[in-house]
Length: 85
Image 1 (cartoon, rainbow, N blue to C red):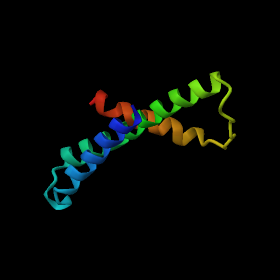
Image 2 (cartoon, rainbow, N blue to C red):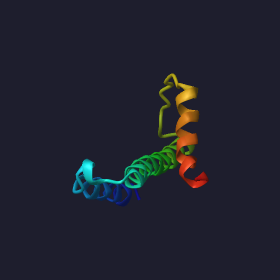
Image 3 (tube, rainbow, N blue to C red):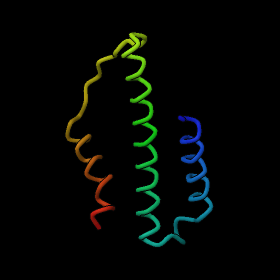
Image 4 (cartoon, rainbow, N blue to C red):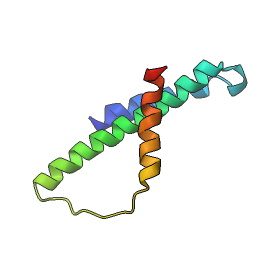
């Protein structure tokens, strides 16, 4: 499941690189950013689900890391901002 998502993400990056930045409309720049952000979030969710399965099977050790809650909330807000417009 992770490989197809990574391939979709990579293909979208290649497609957007084919259009020079100076030829992109504001809407296209915003769409490109949203696609990238949402693709990264989807890959992250799949990774979290796979990690959860490993935790349930007691085959994954957790590594506690500090988290910036403000950045996390901002990312969630940005992810849903496109839908709101």
